[in-house]
View 1 (tube, helix red, strand yellow):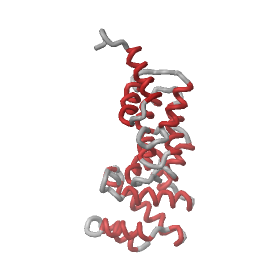
View 2 (tube, rainbow, N blue to C red; view 1 turned 45 degrees about the vertical axis):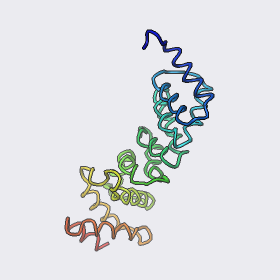
View 3 (cartoon, rainbow, N blue to C red; view 1 turned 180 degrees about the vertical axis):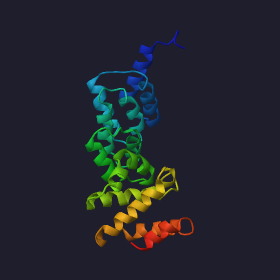
View 4 (spheres, helix red, strand yellow; view 1 turned 90 degrees about the vertical axis):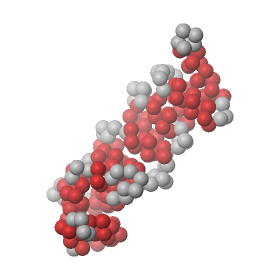
Length: 213
């Protein structure tokens, strides 16, 4: 209805609703309308940053932030500050363009209050964990972080994980080889048992490797 309703009127309505409503769904509607315009207003941006801290609104705010010049930096801040679905949504849309982001994805990205599995594949790929795992040497801290990622990747109830990886079996084998080299306190025995049970009867090489850790 662009001939009878101007874009300016739609934006004004969205902003009025944003600033005045106490209804969650109305606020989401206003945020949805603001996704299609670019407004360089510092006060509005600060309000959106605050709203983005609520898991219920994070995704809507991210869609708006993606139009900002420093979009990835803003999304990274939301990912760090949120703990629930907000972190999951932010991780999914975060571009791992710096060593800081990649390191955070490796160590913190799957730590949410919902289920680590939701972010496991994004964190694995974004952190370049595979390169660390296949390197000649690996630090104990990196191995522990990779262990947590692999545990989440193996939990494929709600979403694809290890089975969605092109070299999933090779990753598990490399992980088990590294596990044999690690001090006992660095090895998550429950994860090793999970691998053994998962691959028994399916891939006896992996099951045997797990039994030897």
